[in-house]
Length: 232
Image 1 (tube, helix red, strand yellow):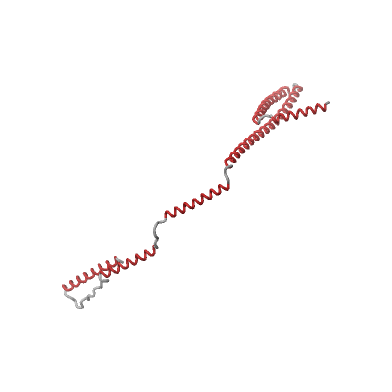
Image 2 (cartoon, rainbow, N blue to C red):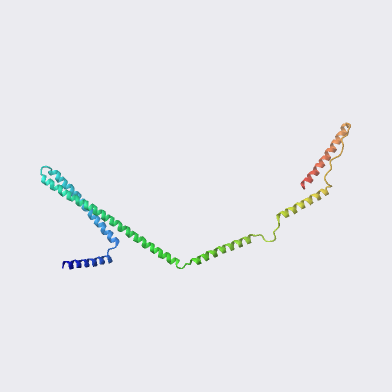
């Protein structure tokens, strides 16, 4: 009979456990309950610390006067200290459990949002074909090349093109012909005056006349040279 009762209890426990897991509390509710438990245990800690101080005062007060009462107070203080130690351990466990639950809840929310973003990205890309994108990019590159060729064709000057060196050589020939014609029109290069100075010392008047005539001839010669050099 006891075995059947234990089996029934076990079956009911499994059913209740399955029921709790199926319709259990949400992470927010569990975190809230853990915080309430932490507050309750913290208040009990404060109460036990005050009781420990009271029992210590009783033990000091009685001392050797009432040894029995002093020992009883110390025993109660020890039991209170044990309870306080147990509560410290319980608080550490609850705090660890609450932090783990908060982290799990945070990770669940993060994964949920990441999945939502992944579905959105999949929806965006579902109408895109990688091969079509490659073809599109290739078409864009080809059209850019065509546009560059058109721009270069438009920027080129119309008409025939000439060799600049040939034009410069022809210009030099024209300048040489013009120089030769100018020299012919002036009768060639001017001749240097060939008048000889008199061997004998002339008179003062004859000397002045010869000097003036020579200066005039040299002046004309210099002017003719300047005209020739202007055309060179």
